[in-house]
Structures are given as C-alpha cells and as structure tokens.
Image (tube, protein in one colour):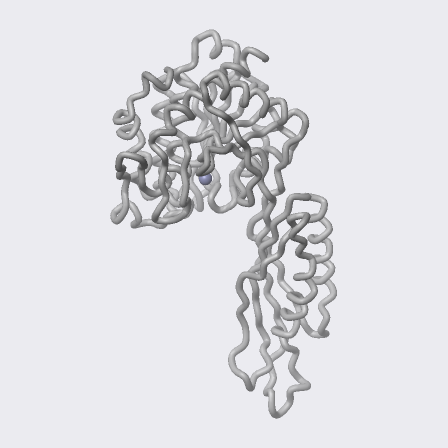
Length: 379
Ligand SMILES: [Zn+2]
C-alpha cells in the first residue's frame, strides 16, 4: 500500500472501535477487549498470537509473530493498549473528526499507532515477510509505567535486533531518538506526636524531617545535565498545636544520565537509613521507574536508515530528545537500538484535547512499512 491508495474513511472506521472503549490502565476488562480485537486482526492474516496474563490488576499483553518458531527477532514493534482515561470517558467523549484532525481518548496515544503497526506489517511484500522474524508486542500498562509488563517487554527486546515504538510522532512531525529516565517516589515520615505547648520536647516532628529532605535534595537539581528533582506534593500535620507524627511527599526525578540517577538513589537510601532526627522512621516506595534511553552507535545506524527511507518518500525526518518516558526507555536502555515516534502525528496527549493529524496517517504508515522493508534488505 502506498499513501496514494490510502482510504481515510476506512481507516477511521477501523480506528473507531479501538478508541470507543474505556480502556484506561485501571480498566483491565476494556484493555482485554482491545486485546481481543487485535488478536482477531492478526489471526486473520495468519500470525500467531500469544496472550500474556499479568494478573487481575491489569489487562493482558499480546506477543504476535509471523514466525512462531523464531528464537530471535529482526524487528520488535511495540504499542500499548491502555490509555490514561478513566471509566465513563467514552460515554462523554468518543472518536470524532473534522477536516484536519481526529479527536478521542487515546486516538493518538496510541490506538492509531497500534493500527499503523498492523496495517504496515499486514501489507508487507511476501518475500520481506519470509525473510524477517517480526515480533509485535502490545502491553496493557504503559501509562502507569509498564510495572507489570516491563520485564516481559525487556525479555523480548533482548532477543530482538532493533525496536520500533509506534507512539505518536511529535506535533512538528519529529521522531523520538531519546527519552529521559524518570523515577517517582512516595516517601512517608513517621515521628511522634506531642502537645506543642505542654511537652514539645517529647515529640519528633515528621514535617521537620520532610523539610530536611527537601532542603538536602533540591540542590541536586542540575538543569545543565538534565537531572531534576521535584517534590510535587507535601502532606502532614493536624494543627498548629500538635507536633506532627506523620508527613509524606511525592518526589519525581528525571535524568539523562543513568549513573547520575544511581548516585542519587544511593544518597536517598542513605537518608532513609540515617534520618536527621532521632525517632523518625522513613518508608520509601518507588512507584514508577524508567531508565533513560539515549542513542548508541547501533541506534544511529537505525536512525540513518529511517532518514534514508524518509528521503525516498519525500518525508524529511527530524529528531527530538524528549522528557517524557515510554516503553522505548526499557528497550533502549538495554542497548537494543530503539526508535520511537513512528505513529501518526498527535498532540495534547492525556487531555480532553488529544488529537491526531489526519493528513499524517498515510505518510507515517508508508514510512513504517518502508522502514521494515529496508531493514529486511540489510538483514
Ligand atoms: Zn502512549
């Protein structure tokens, strides 16, 4: 299929059932229905689908391949089936479009990416299909950090020569060559309550310890290297006359340098073990974590191949390094050449203004399909 044969109305018809389902990460039944639909599509073209169960808290994952016997994959394609939108969203807001854009929960992030992967691989020339071992992996929990599916994704990536992630292209059309790492902590401080007037000396203030953490860790932010810390919430205390026995905070850390994060992690562990106040206990919970992904030599070769492919179809390729994480962080940080942003152009993700640019679908589909063909040529 070239972009000239592309039929927008048919595409939107096919996209509609994938968007018009409440399938936030916390709605596993909805994610499972997406998995059912994708299973049917791939089984219809004769690919083998293996369903992965991650327990009741999240939906299933799908590992789809054209070569069930393969021990190594030439290409791993990744898309996630969940969205950030809670149950009830679709009743109020479903897929619509005007002349320029489609709107709807997850239309760009990343149902159109899932559909583009399917349309790209299902329209490959037969000889390309024969030559390549392809794995399409769809996970149910990317939006909450792939906590359940991360190890499974990484295991497939380790058997793959390269990874293409079909999250939406950036609003300016750029693909994504690097993503910052992130860690999200919840930190709880337990001290000892006391009357602030009668016997303050008997109290141990959880808020004072929390304040010590903020003042100790904030100077670790370095805008030049891109390691940044943000205490995003603080809670604690019951009134001015009570020494507070409890406080908590959310700490978000972003970084380009995985070693810089490791050093910070050690510093934080030391602060847990050695509170500044006697009588404080600290409970540290790492809620989410993604290592940084930055290009290595092999990813640069993959990027060059994508740029060449773009040239052939009159699509100039530009790259961005971005702050937000995706599953590309998991595979890229293993050293497996990884490129992201191979879906249609989208924007305002995670909001009710989320959109996907209609005029970008056909070209991006052609790009993805031709990248796969060109990888086959070099394989
Ligand atoms: Zn996404």
